[in-house]
Each structure stands twice: as structure tokens, then as C-alpha cells.
Length: 491
Image 1 (spheres, rainbow, N blue to C red):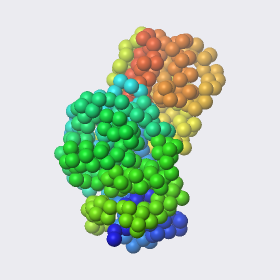
Image 2 (cartoon, rainbow, N blue to C red):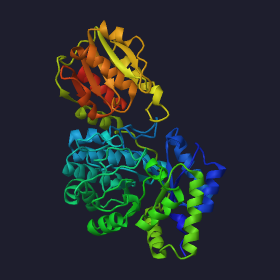
Image 3 (tube, helix red, strand yellow):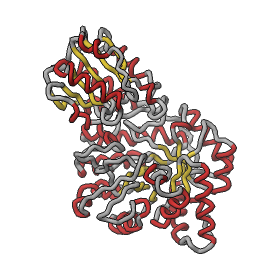
Image 4 (cartoon, helix red, strand yellow):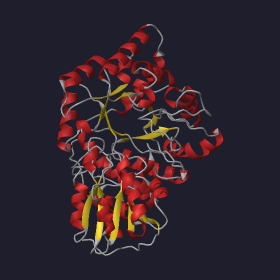
């Protein structure tokens, strides 16, 4: 009998494999490990982490990481910080998407990372989606499919498996599944034409893995996709003809944990037809889930043929030999900079004409220290402000709040400034950024160029007199690109 414990992918804690982590993998037989920011310091340390864990277990692992580019980044240094899907979507060039996938693989594979949980293939819509946003290639399903397929080939041609997400597509969700359970009410035919299209392209491209979503789609099933055999088997396997690995999204998200214990959710996930069951945070939930699946298998409540098939699919993606190369960063920065420059555009021409003179200009930079535990910034949370100060010499640079709403003396500073460039970090989500944008809209709209660096949806919050630039991301190369567009003679 194949042990269902083999189907798990666990997240662990620490920069080195702890005794607890090794014990968990030994006792469960889990094959997958998800590396998160809490496990990553440098590339060399990451490789040492993977090597030590595999050595202590005496077997290879399916090592995965979320390395989408843009918003979702786990490495602070030593790996290229690429602009994400929104930037590639604006560039509209599959060759660039392939090059990004290829470069990512050249940097990840030598570390022992076998799977990149990307690309995101969710098609954006007119509604504000707090969980996707700039992670999407955009609203054109055909373009998303072409870019996603090219990105996939770039990764897989160079030794790293791609994982398309979040099937069958949650671009129209208005709730972030990390927080609660979204429901997308859309007719099946219309949904299939738009949101399934990029996944069809990924399947045709031979993608190794597909991740499902914690979203309810009433047109397909009354239960969420994670637990839906109609979606996993009937749509993905049969309708799309997909034969690769099906991976669950993290079962510790609010969409799940507010309704089901992790162990019960894992059982329903397996019954729906998943091959890999992901639990990223709850150590006790991991143990409980393994115990439940083993007890259920022993009692005959688990389909052994499905477990065997899932185990075989996992084995197909495990490495046959150790990588012996070092990460190749040769073309990374140049490629990232090219994409960043292509992504920047003026989306609303207000009264401020660009580029503006540096003299008398105030540049407002979000205080990323307030969210350093939630997001990864290459070079650390102070790096964006340091970059702005270096590039925009002659401008006054000031911080703006993200989580808090205390604007201090900002109102007086704004009132006495000739021109303002405001880097806006999602005013729809963060109260501090909303307060800043409200102040500028009331006091200085005609003198302000707002640069959207995290959410294109913030355009709707900007008055018509305000010039708005969309950078489609906040990686350092993107901040540099938008400053060059907004301020004259940036050095």
C-alpha cells in the first residue's frame, strides 16, 4: 500500500533544518517542501538548507518556492528581482516572458529548487481583486495564455517545473482567499471562454503542475474548487486533457481554516483528485492530516489507485542528480530593467506635465518598514527610499505611512511644495496610503504626479487633475524606471 503521507508538501521554520522539521519529514514521508521567506537569507544558505535536509532524510525532495516576480518575492538578495506579470503583460512580448522563465531557472535550479509556483494565470477583470492585482498578466485571456506558456517553457526547458495557478481562475474574485472564501458568480460558458483559456494554453505547453484555488464557482459546483472533483477531475483532467501534477493551494488560508480543520480539509482535497496536499504553516495540522489520511487508508476509505498515481506523478518530477552549477545572474538585471522600462506608462494626463524639474519637487516614498514582516524587498525595506534619494538628487524625499494614518507635517510640506511625485502603495488596501492620496487629491491634485506601484485599481481614487503613472510594480528596477519617466534628468 502506498503511504498517503508521501503526497504532502509542508512549509517548515528556520534558516536551517530543525530537529522538529527533520522528524516531521521522516515520520510523514512527505515528498514536498515549500520554502518561504522565513527559510531564505542568501542563495548559498538556501542551497545549504536544501542539501542538509535531503542529506538528513536520505532522499530527494520536491522543493518549491513562490518566485513569481513582482509582488511575490522570497529572496532579499543574490537572485534577480524581476518585475511581475503585470509588467510582462504591458510589454506583451512572449520572448521576454520566456527569457524571464529561463533566467529564473538558471538561478533557482542550482540551489536545488525543483518547482516554481508560477505563473499566475488569473485573468484580471474590472473589479478590485486584493489577492491578485499586479500578479496577473492582465485582462486579455489570449495574451495571458501566450505569456504564461512562454514563461512555462522558459522554466521547464532549463530544469525547473512550472506550476500554473489558481485553477480554474480567480481573477474575478473580490475577496483574498488568504483572508476568507471568495465566490465568483459567473455563467459557465462566459467563465470558460475567459478564465480557462490561459490554463488551456499552459496544458498545451506541457506544464508540469497546476495549482487549484480556494474559491467557490457555483456554475461548476456548490463546493470550492479545492474540494471539487467536478472541477479537478471533470474540468481539468477530462475537459482540458491535463495529465500532470495537481497541487492544492496552502490549506492554512483563511478561506479554509475559518470553516474546516486542516486535517479534514486535506482529506476532502485528496478526494477531489489532488496529487500534492500543501500545508504551509500549521505544524500540528500537518501531523493531524497525516494521521487522518493513514487511518482512512487503513480503513479502506482512501482510493489506493489514486494515491499510487499521485505518488508516481511526484516521482516523475524528483531530480535524478544533484545540480552542480552556480546560479547564473549574468543577464538578470539587464532583462529586469528592460521589462520595467516597457511597463511604465502615463495612464492619466492631469495638469502636471512629465518629466518635471527636480528643483522644488517633493518625492513621497512609502515607509516600507511598516510592512517588512509581510513583504520582501530586495536589499531590505530601506532600499527603495535609498534608491530614490540617490537617483533624484535635488528633490526633497519624505516618507508616507502605510499601516498608520499619522501624516505628521505632511499637509504643511505639501502646501509649500512646487511639484509632488507620490509613490502610491495600494491605497485601497492600506489606510496610510489612502490618507496620503486623499490629502493630495484635496490640496495638491494639479501639482501631483501619482505613481501606482502596487495596484492599478488605485487610478479610480485619483482626481482628473492629477497626473497618474502606472509602474505596475515596486521592484527597484521599476522604481528607477518610473522616476526616469516622472522627473527630469534623474541620475
